[in-house]
Image (cartoon, rainbow, N blue to C red; front, side):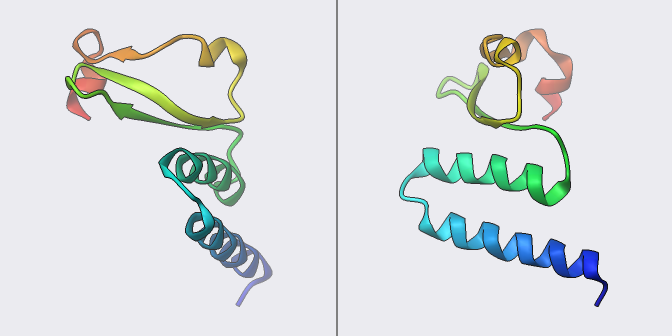
Amino acid sequence: MECSETRYISKLCELCGDLIAAEDLQQTLQVLTKGCTGSLKVKACSIRLLDEKGERLEMRAAHGLSQGYLKKGPVEIEKNPLDQKV
């Protein structure tokens, strides 16, 4: 197995262990966003969940995003055609 593949699998195993140790949904989502940025070698990651009315996507966890982006607030699905398809 290549060294990069070994590192990738090692990071995924570490992420799995962190997910198992998470005590609640919020901690699980935070572990996922942080783990994905490291495993996928991306700068940032966020998870938005649909609100109870099914009208907005609300930020529930993020890693590596600017404060300005985090302050944008929820995404109104009605106003965003791409989000409607998702």
